[in-house]
Image 1: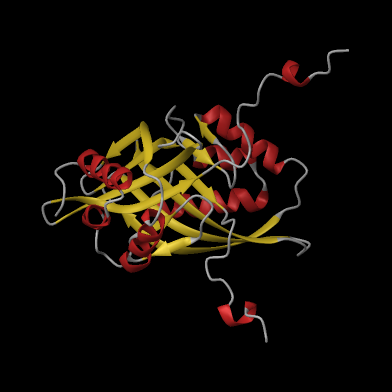
Image 2: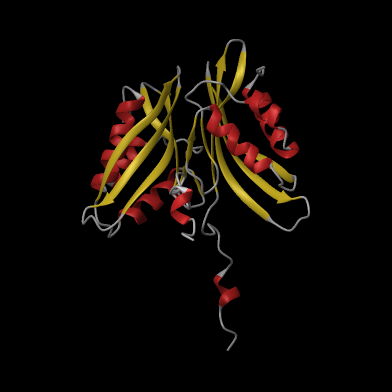
Length: 139
Length: 139
């Protein structure tokens, strides 16, 4: 299975993520040996087997997340497209929330688009610190 | 200035990084408002001003690094190219070392290629831990 546009592939990717649907996740990804995935704080995973195993571990026993995806930049060429997105992820019990920055690369193969790279990272530091005055001693 | 190939732009990027040459770094990047940069552990920087300010801060007072770049995947389309690389970074006094995973996206504009995205991340956990026997008690 493949998708008519990179955006359709991306929608399927996050849909599979939210539903923790491993089969749907497998369909979104290209089966090329060069596919690559970096989860937040994780190392580099190369190839479909390592990537699908990681999704199986993520889905296993996890509480279904709610994910709001904000596309910051979208660019499609003839056979390659890249999306820069912010993922606002919240556990369904609302206990945890995080904003993940992801670069998603899609490539067109026989008739359609599939995911080739998902590179996600979680900032360790706030990019917009509180105003300096908040930390200034009062005396 | 722009570059004849994405690989030439990438070479110029890491050359500017190693030499801490802010002017050269500015030349590598597209001046489009949609350029984006994520440093390891950092938040999302959007636009040339925020990105160049970050490089100025990185270069300021830093010891010149040694960087060995290993391209893991390279794909060029008509106007968009993406590279997945491992950066083996070592401070010149050899005191610190890190392996950073980066996705670099280049785009072709009037006559040449320039960097549009640098998304770098540092694994928080070892992906290939030492063999378990190394940690096993001897008794």
